[in-house]
Amino acid sequence: MWTLSTLGYAACVTTSAYHHGNLRAALVETGTAMARESGPDGVALREVARRVGVSHNAAYRHFADREALLGAIGAVGMDLLTDTMQRRLAEVPDGLEPVARTQQRLRAVGRAYVEFAVAEPGLFRTVFMGQADAAGFETVDETEEDSGPYQLLNQVLDELVEVGYLSPDRRPQADVVCWSGVHGVAVLHLDGPLRLAPPEEREATMLRFFDIVERGLGGGAG
Figure 1 (cartoon, rainbow, N blue to C red):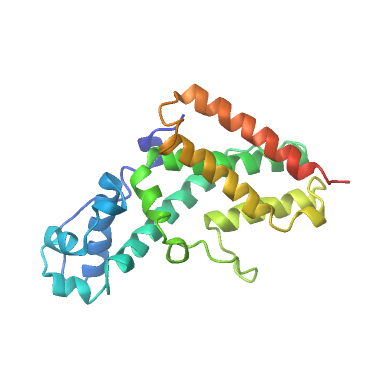
Figure 2 (figure 1 turned 90 degrees about the vertical axis):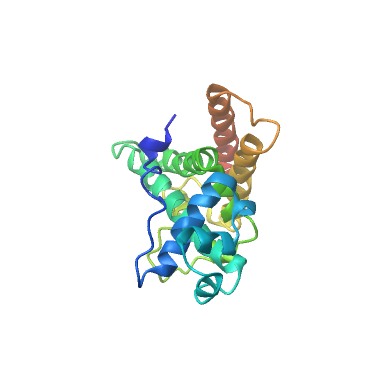
């Protein structure tokens, strides 16, 4: 199982001194550090401003309210989640048979999602505290070469159609089904009855989940 250092999280966000002309970035940086420690409930705009060393009025020039700041912090979390997914995808071997490789890519996306939730619970909770639109889970724009988490999931599902495993008539809403399932696995291990499960049990749960999802997706394939 990956650690924070191997995922590269530890160096991503650290509180630093505010430099003139970069106040917004300093507020987001400090707020992100607070969210990582205590989740969204631990972030207050006035306290963020105090830690940065500016008045709360100065902070309000960049963020209208706490929700706006949480949205910006959520965007940071989404970027880190995207990085985790891309690392996992890069580990899938190129030489596999097309269907097997695409199945492994789907598993990589799901595994990264759960790993991020467990490794960064504060940021994960912040991203999903009513901040979906601000954090990047908007409807996919097919005209863009986006690589956000939701876009990566859709790309892999489209690949399953291309290799003949997922039939086109079963593709609509498959992204919502997969996303709902992997989010449930993540929350069960983060805040639910599986939160004390050891890593090997979490691994077994994910493998079983992936098996069920793959059978469901392939059920209508020709």
